[in-house]
Length: 286
Image (cartoon, rainbow, N blue to C red; front, side, top):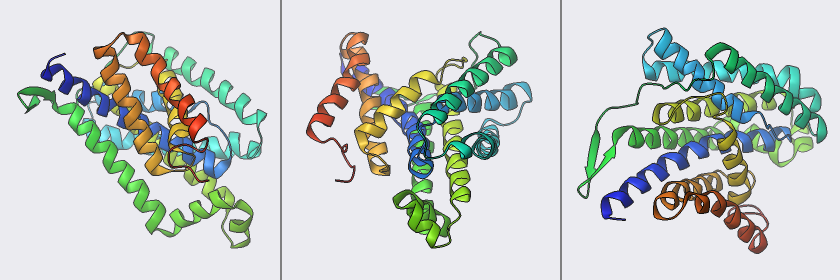
């Protein structure tokens, strides 16, 4: 590989990694606050991308406005899911899994029925490229990374500097203690699901702009999100960011440097090694 190919691979890896971070953040928030593994989160990611596509391509709304509206729509959708589907199954093991699998089939069927099986695309975030060390890096990759980093910072500030954010952290650390302090657990669950679904919609939009849309596009990012949670450590924003970047760089660089098969297996090998050395993940609590 020459220098240009390396730079392109690294840029693609960073863009992929930060998209993985967005879906992992939503997963870890929902799991930390509600105690459930939302296995339909990849389909929320996919539907969020299609909402942006419908607004932008079908109705002619500005791409960035469409992305913001998609995040709002999916946040409301998340509140509905939490209240009517997942709230009765909180802190249980089997019921949330069954609900998630059923929701996965429903959302995929809805996407196929509404938009068809043919791949679609969202307009690029920006046209053209920037030069780095005599290599062209597409502007849309840079903007996608910028958006993802900005959202991570906003989530961090929300959790650390606001009353509701502190209440969410308290609920994640000790649901019973938070309840005794007057924190409404149902409100925290709704908020966690709304934020998680909004982040998934943003990730889906960024992925749809760089790659393509199809009804099964959420399956692979969901797997990556689950790997990131284990790799970075449960409930750690820093762990989600570092784990996402690691997986993104692996997916961006290894298929170019080696065979694609190595890139598909490498993340799981890394996770197994890390779990053997540090079972709580890179930044998890002892």
